[in-house]
Amino acid sequence: MTALIDSNVPQLKLLSKGKVRDIYTTSSPDHLLFVASDRISAYDVILNNGIPEKGRVLTELSLFWFDKLKHIIQNHVVTSRIEEMPEEVHQHMEQLEGRSILVRKAEVVPLEAIVRGYITGSAWAEYKKSRTVHGIPLPDGLLESEKFPAPLFTPSTKAEQGAHDENISPERAAALIGQDLYDKISVVAVDLYTAAAEYAATRGLIIADTKFEFGLIDGELILIDEALTPDSSRYWPQDGYGPGRSQPSFDKQYLRDWLTSQGFRKGLEGGPDGQGWTMSDEVVQGTQERYLSARDMLLK
Image (cartoon, one colour):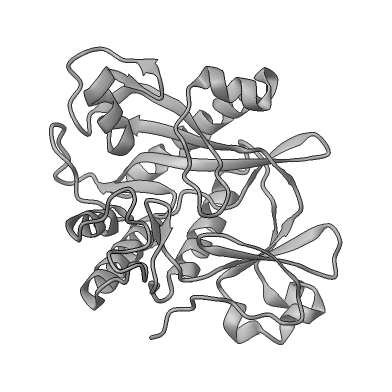
């Protein structure tokens, strides 16, 4: 099975190309077409090869979570059914079906809304150095992968393509987007995480952390982009969980660990030979299996 690295919809104008999603304008002036490719990134670097069917897994999970959490906040989804999209999209059904969503245009809030239920990843690295997470002071004695007493809202910048997101303090985030909007986002993001984590727990999964993105339509705050996928979240199996060590996961951590083992570090984003980073077949298969496991545990 071949991975779809680049979508090809010549009848539509390609508005932007992200790490995973290709965004097109349509004949409907109020709507955009989001196409989830099979590209994958780690440490803000897009790998040369992709994960077959990954875009469809992300789309299926996002649609599930958008619908499940709409009682907390509305989202940008119009339809995922190709036949309900503008006519110029229909002829590309084979390529786009299962990986495309027609969405409402929104003004993107330039902030990554990260919610952490457990201390891991960059949060753990910062805590070991300074006993802080995103500049927020925390008590001594926390263990790797330990659950926080309450979910922690930890924003980051939303970097342009090719640049790195930067973890920032709540004070800096509020200055960036305005205190009122920051307050709204910080509350709703924690509410979304809490509801999702409670459901995931009934399916044998821990959501260690996740990232949300928000937009504004006529002043109304809505959820946009994707929701609680293995690209934007850390999923751990409940079975065998224990603080004091790293956890097995159904997300990109497997790929991050492989990249690190291959010598990846800051300054080597272009690969050891300047040709980028290419996953081995084993890593492609291992990553795909983890994404499919997360989907199946949540949905089946």
